[in-house]
Image (cartoon, rainbow, N blue to C red):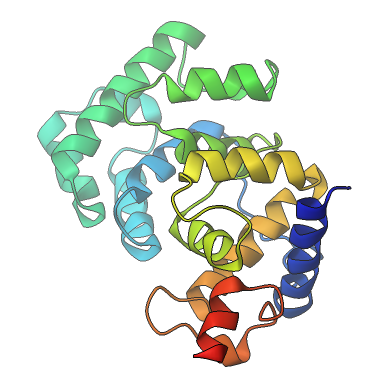
Length: 226
């Protein structure tokens, strides 16, 4: 294990002692990964509450993906409006459903899991509006394939602690974490980092005095010294 891997492991150990998501991982899997894909598309540029409200409204109005695919775009926009960017997201959803029906003969991407992580990732990121983070979420949560999604909270913690350079992109951080972290720690470690970014290592006014990563953290040491 190299130096960076040891540093990350130490940080993950400290966060696990605080948040316990490795010992008791949250149940985030959808039996149909397409549900997770559409949910994650809705999550873009909004918060979890708005995302969930939009998804619940969508499923209430269109109980199956076949029904969604046949919907008028205006009706779909209205259903998902709480998630924001409804015109853009509605069109993306309809296009994604059309591509999946063409490629899989129906509205399911369960067979995609059998192709393995790399091919599944390539397929997902080729869909309109599906970037690296969205694909990684579907792989990790819904297909149980090894991936490490990086959102704004995880990116902020990794940069502040000094695991990565300040200007490293989220996609590059994701690749680094997949390389340096054992796959068994991906899910719980991912959720622990998000919880820490929300509760302690906040974008504004981080609570450094309450942070178990202070001895590792470059930014925390600078704050303490200043």
